[in-house]
Structure formats: structure tokens, C-alpha cells
Length: 86
Image (cartoon, rainbow, N blue to C red; front, side, top):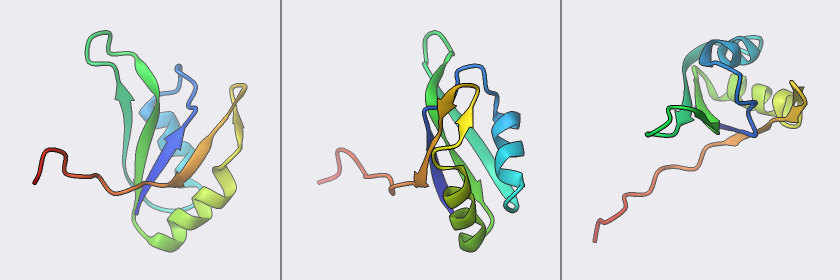
């Protein structure tokens, strides 16, 4: 299950996010989206968890959680749309 995580403090690293989510289940991957020129965090990313129930539990527990003064926005990720496909 892929989860969107927004309003992420810019100082948070992928390992920090993995630690947050690991409390609720097996984390397969974490990706913080960065600016392609400055390589700084854009403040959001994606977490892939092993199972749907674990992902739902993580969403319920982490959405709105205060982390370093910012309230995380955690939800199910929307599937990517194939842009430019006719």
C-alpha cells in the first residue's frame, strides 16, 4: 500500500519517516520528494507499506501528528495518472 505524507518538516530524513511508520508495520520504502535543482526536500513524500491493514493503521495514527512543530498530512496515495497518453 502506498501512502502520501505531506507537511513534512524539511529537516526530516527518509530514515526518520521510516522509523515513524515502522511502529505500525513493515515499511518497504520511503521516498521524500526533492527539488531537482537544489536537492532540498519539497515537504512531502511517499511511504510504501507491506500490507493494507498496516497502512490504514499508520494513516489513522499519524495523520495530524505533530512532528517538529508541523502537523503531518497522511493519506492513501492517489494512483499516478499517465500524462500525455491519448
